[in-house]
Length: 165
Image (cartoon, rainbow, N blue to C red; front, side, top):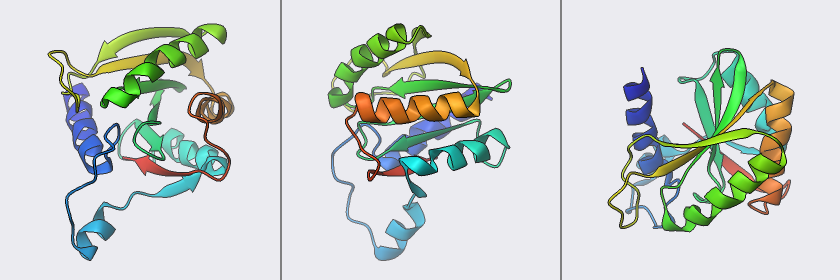
């Protein structure tokens, strides 16, 4: 199960440019339409997470990103939500420390892990993943996601996010 999630996450990151600001190769109109992710503004996050909670998503996680750098994942496990941030791009690395500080200041346990994905920058190590264990409810994780996008990534209520996967 974990291997399937890792493989899917890797594929998803490639298609969504999560953590990679490099422009995608030219695609035909049909290819662009096929790869278009569902989009929301932050006020639609609770609805997207409700689908996740109700098992209406393909996997037990979804992510949101507006630009590939601000990509946070919401993981639903054993009736609770947790957050993850994988630094696939060099420009994401500074956000690991910011998110650790945020986690600590909100009294959440965090740990560093990896899914062994190769980052999109020169490194002999796999991409680092910060996991914030909030073991939260739908309302708690929705508020936390809004707060992270606002305070850490400086997005506002008009920012449009792609939902991945």
